Image (cartoon, rainbow, N blue to C red; front, side):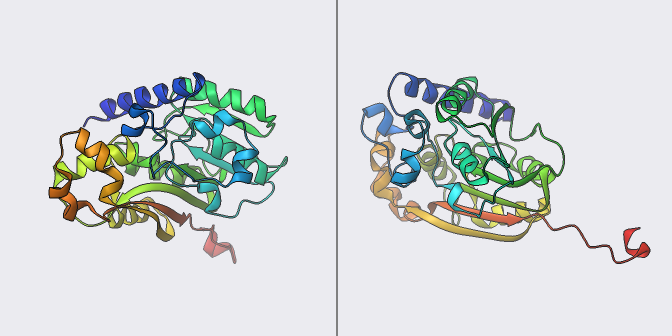
Length: 283
């Protein structure tokens, strides 16, 4: 799929999700949203009651993630955090609470409807250390070495140019900065058509990386201390309704699907700046 096509599909889907929240519904994607049922196992129960209760209801309803990236890494007072694909702002607002008044939490999103919803949630939350930016995660509108931590909640899998996303993340991180995201990944090889069908359910738009490919791309971007920790492994029965409605024979593909799709915490670090020990090592 062309990069432009992917971006337009993502904009449309996430714009619609924001509008559903405005009308009092949930942002859930996939078959469950269409049928009016509750969110599926991917997007449900990601935040504890204390976290959800501290934010505007609309920020919680707008969550389209597959994990809780704010639980991934220590956030310290005074740090600067950037959320790639911030949606309704739930992870930005939670991060802002943890970095405190001396810190800053940025959210980056390309969808006007989500940015409007996020700014309204910022107002309702009374967050003074939050800023939402319009832009694409392939072209982050922040200077080099300006961010301590990058988080993201199941958005990088939606990009058609993940290498560029990871290079941009590396660029804006300070030396020693942390990359700590939730994302959808796959494990092992499978039939391309089956992979596409299941990924449409898992991430609304196909595009998740195989776990070893994800690691390799992080290395190529310059990261080190890379780890990938599965958090939710999806079983074929989780997707049965969606796949059946798409004309897929679920029982026939089960052996190729079961346990091969998952949400995962992906962590990495930008190497720290070298200590200068004298004139020669600074050249």
